[in-house]
Length: 263
Length: 329
Image 1 (cartoon, rainbow over the protein chains, first blue to last red):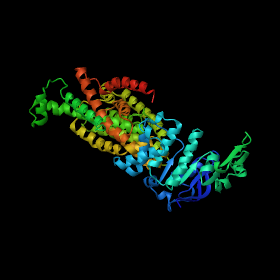
Image 2 (image 1 turned 180 degrees about the vertical axis):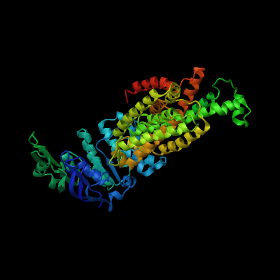
Image 3 (image 1 turned 45 degrees about the vertical axis):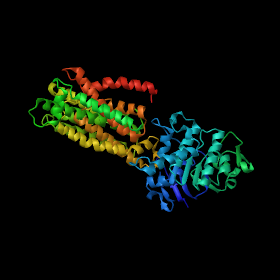
């Protein structure tokens, strides 16, 4: 088991209710898990607590059998990579420099980049089809290219656990599909433990092996996409009526049937 | 080869600036005089007394003050994720100035060579300790609170300085006022020794933070995810940048714009990767202040214009040009 969480509750200071309540989940290698749920359901919090970026108020998170609090950030970054939802660029940066940051846990503070580091960065850029844009300033990239550059940085960490927070936000249809295909392919090829937070129920059902449904900080369903993505569960979680169609190999399509969500 | 070019260019300029600086002053010295003064022994030689007692310590001070202010500015900019941050933003200078002006007003500043710099250094470090304590919320350093606390503490200390100046006799007023303007004159070898002892290790440590400062520029969460101990790095960056600034203020007073313009220009020319930016900024800052100081002395004639005024006159137009070119960021 890669990650095991047991009765985890997360409470942010000043928040009225916990962001995550008594959550127990485990994740294993080679499996792509999609985390679904409405805004504020605790999806990003789940990723943060798995990586030890925040401490649970109750319960325990273990990574590879050791409590996450015992891992240093550097050890953790050699085994896990995160593509977070938002990122600011305070200073001009090239794609190459952005992706090279993924080598930080391998280089530490003082070591200069070695040929092996440059090769890993090159391979990561190749994996996301950005080799031709290595020298471009990050500020000139399109939303899709930027998202791929950040995925390349995560790949350059050479970790066997990949956590993605809405990796297809702001992406168009084609780029969204390509991203999910790539994530699925990398998971199987490199036998990664992959956890993707997303709002695209359709692509999640098509490209993930397992779905976790969150609502109000609680895990309301876990299982194979077709077991979890049924209309009653989606309606309960998102608070709006939906019609669900099974599109066979194209996954499950959930279409809201009313414009007035109850929450 | 290409990676080494900026280092070679800046080192060359720095050496040329230092060499030029040795010839600026009321006494006309030939290159032979200067070389003889540098390599000979004994104090009988007038040229040696001018070079080793006046001009060289001033140049050495300019090198380390310029370098330290620039590295301090670069680190503050990374820590605060703001390209417009500068070394004095968080109250170091006002704390140091208050301690120095206080020491002058009480009469203890005039007692000995090292009292004033040490008072200023303690004042600067006291100011940043207050700012740090305010900005530390439940074991995390909030950089937005850091800026606000720094600005407010600076304003308070500024008011204290004004009060002391108003209540002081004219003679005290003049020396205290000159101190707040910044000056490279009268810096002794022992003051230089303190300056170097603080700033060189701090600058090297800041260089070691380079990769983590890159990560920090993308936000705390991403930085932590690539293996940076975010809070440790923020604290280290804050103290190193503050120490660099405080050490310069303690020997040379407040010299504006070097710490803002130099890192900005280096970022534009050679990129923002801090492992390169910090050593390049060190060289560029040293060069900028040595050349500015020598140039100001060569043109100023008998009246010494405070170096802080000169750097403002040069720095402001230069900064406005950079700002226009970059469209505000």
